[in-house]
Image (cartoon, rainbow, N blue to C red):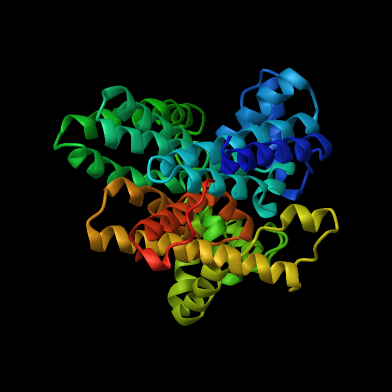
Length: 406
């Protein structure tokens, strides 16, 4: 058996051992997912408070939590093991994007990403980033198969996967447009494939939009915390309590007192408050955006901070090493995109970088925690591995690493 395959199997074993020993931690954000899940298990539907239908969050992670609660009860250990399975599954799906180009690079990249502490430890929190990473990787994998083969089942599946990912976090949904354009030209020109792809998306997301029309009175898909988040990101890059920062409390008080008559939905009102704040001082907002670009590329140490292995805001040698390695991975993803564009390489190679940098751009404009990059971890690792594999193929012979069995 090749050494790279042995490393991959060992990495999976390490992830399973981690999941077996570390039950998922309930952190402050967890309640907004757990409460709807518990209400759903009780047969009351997704509710964020008694008698109040879920609207602050999207349904995919509460549904997953609800299934775990039904099968295993209040077992946070079970959640970690499910997260580990999703984490490993996401890395293996991303590995498939690399395997046809370079099998050894695919194995080594997946193995490293599976045991990379910022990604692996995210499985031990009651948060949705690991699920989102799996759904993003599933979409990228299905889209690559659809673009390679053009079969209707893969095209429809890619659309359904994007719809499922959007029900986790709507940030990914706009990638449907470039995905449809890719399917219109690859593997050959067709107008049927983009339509079938759109149908796959619609069949998954439309029931949730119709549910919102019925229970909220609004035909909408997105969650109702976008304006809240944008307002926070217009204020600072470091918010510890999202319901206590002064600008939010002042906006809510004004809305309750007067402005709810003109805008009955608080989150939409908060969008307006945030936009006006940005317009009042765009230079300050751009500085915050620049800071968020950096924050998105930093290692996620949320779990490590919760268990006392790391102190947020400190810079240790281990953190510096992690920051350099993740920075190199982002640079490799960018280099891959540039290389494919310059050499007119296969467009499917751009799927990973597109997902990675789209997420970075959206979070930079709004708000970001370093843990958010867990969502693109599998595709970031795959993009870096693809970059290395293409460099190895294109480099002059005397610059290539020594060839040996791997």
